[in-house]
Amino acid sequence: MTTLAAPAAPPAVLPRPRRLAELTLLVPALAIGALAYAQADLARSGTLPPRFWAWVALAGLLVLGTHLAVRWLAPWADQVPLPVVVTLNGLGLGLIHRLDLSDAARTPAGEASPVPTASTQLLWTVLGALLLVAVLALVRDPRQLQRFTYTAMAVGLGLILLPLVPGLGVTINGASIWIRVGGLSFQPAEVAKLALIVFFAGYLVATRDALAVARSRVLGVDLPRGRDLGPILLAWLVSLAVLVFEKDLGTSLLFFALFVALLYVATGRRSWIVIGSGLFLAGSFVAYRLFPHVRSRIDVWLDPFGDAADSGYQVTQALYGLADGGYLGTGIGRGSPDLVPYADSDFIISTLGEELGLTGLMAVLVLYAVLVERGLRTALGARDVFGRLLATGLAFVLGLQVFIVVGGVTGLIPLTGLTTPFLSAGGSSLVANWVLVALLLRISSASRQPPTVVPPSPPRSDDALTQVVPR
Image (cartoon, rainbow, N blue to C red; front, top):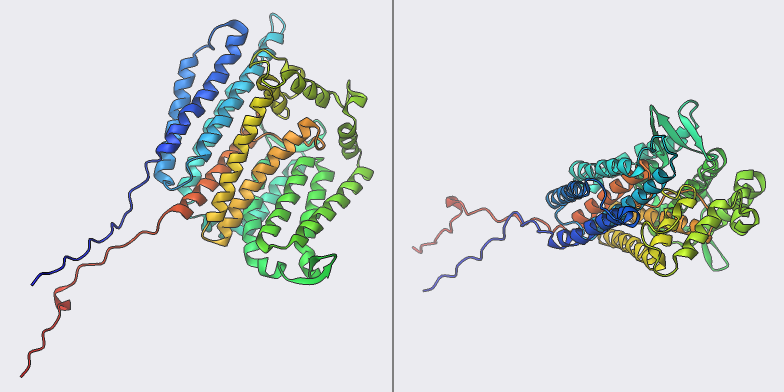
């Protein structure tokens, strides 16, 4: 009589993925940033930057440490986003360093050179990477954030309105979107967008069934009940308030478009897009008629060369730079992007297009498209509605911000003043976008991790089969 051996129990703890694809992709990602940084000096002086290899070693340790932290804290996360972010961040540092060299060359003899923006940007990069690790360590389950739905709303709205506080807010170039504490300036709307995404996702999880109910049908479009129009009307009024009082066209557009997009994803009703588009067009028309700063932006967009020496100077110089770059660009350090005001922040896309050409600009846009696509793929794979809406909002706000910036610089839409994620100089934007990627990695890891299988416990002695003996 043969006995069959019991099948081996599956392991209780699954082995962690080695994430070799991410590690392999991080090598060329780091190299692109290092080459851009070196080329800026090689084009001007023919030598490498001072302490170049020390900076490369520091950047390598930072990237390796971030990879190991993700490998430990979110082992099942998507392996593509981190290399893409490192590529964009490194290339941005190289372009900012190139503009620092131009600023130093224009400094009159005997005067101190301005503080390099690239050094400050590198410190913000370190802080962003540390915050990515902190978010992964603290948010072990993305569903935890749903408990803070209305807290996130209060935080988000408070941050947006913070620049209006007397003595704290600072007006720069006509826009009141900054606060200054001590010697540091910060743009709170960058952090507010993350809090508002959490609020929108949590709110729509609870109300999406009611918001999906159609009351009437007009021209083939299902319209919601009148009482359900309150949320979108409130979002519209808040976005108009941001536009009117802070003169921040970019944040206003980003805030309202984000809510409309998540409404559509949550309910599947095209009517929300129709209503949102109508409210946007109506608000834009009213703002154009009533507020001079909005009218000025629209006029410059329609005819930037009409006042190329004053109000249209930035846009026209950016267009000249893009034209000068051609297909392959002038090469980093060989163009004149410093002729464009704020070439390292609002107009870094023109710097990129001039010195890397249309080819380099399209390559960077493809990287952004890959990052957004991976975010949307994460949303599709999420196991709960909140995670799906949260990942969708994070990916959408990243893609929309890139569209608004590139569209404004190239003349497709009016200029708004937003920064390009990971490329532009600015600590608030850089840190907020590192946190955004951390949340996407956490959702991705939670959705991809296989369920843990607990092996059955061995039978106890009193569980043995009892043999029945006949009389």
